[in-house]
Length: 334
Image 1 (tube, helix red, strand yellow):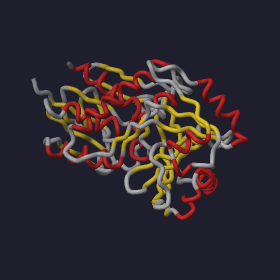
Image 2 (cartoon, one colour):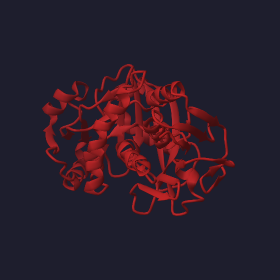
Image 3 (tube, helix red, strand yellow):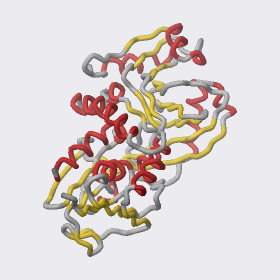
Image 4 (cartoon, helix red, strand yellow):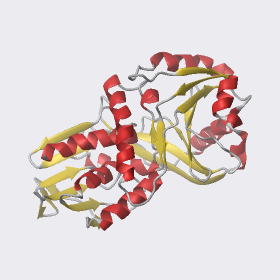
């Protein structure tokens, strides 16, 4: 039976929810931004799929869900009309000699995930994986199951697919949610995917700030995500197609929505330069900040009250966990 369903928010979880439901149901999407949703956490993110690395900071059950979500991502992307860059060739964690202790601490906190485990590397092995890092690092760790995707391409391709499926979009739209009515219009179900936009309904939500730089660096040829251990500002470098790179720090406990500070920009770019000197000649395409929605336990939450289903609190695990979390939410109307 086809249902009339409203989806509030067109960020990462909103898009995945719409893709899961559009084949069988009549959908209306409400988004306060435009179709790009460029202020959403999913748009700013590096879109890394890193269950082993994230197991250092989350419970094992979430890391295992993330491992399962990587397979789901391949299914989701295969159903889009436009190709979206997806990669699963593992990630590389490195440290300068003076930060060896931070790397050892990271390895001790990794949780086992099925048959996957971290592989300690010496300098020659690092060079085998990433030839352009030869001679730069003498210790590292390879995390074999990890991957990434191109979130900008996913945002574009998902909007195109949903448009072709007849989804009704309402952009630049403020939402008044009353029971299962949205702006006075009645729906069979309402999926609330607004993240921090739902803070009035979820007062325990907090924002966790993330900052990223997007670069075009033609002199850099890294082939997989790289993490640099550092006591103050550990960073990640996620290579995208056509010499595009997303460079970010892990997290900042702040609800500041302001632009990236000079200090943050200097730390991000300086750390990237110590990984590969080719970034010095790169071009900065954007410096962005965003707020990830999180609860006190940093775990995602799906709740159902009557005909309203809420998906929220994905914290820093958005791309890693979203397919599994959305599947759980959608199953509530089965």
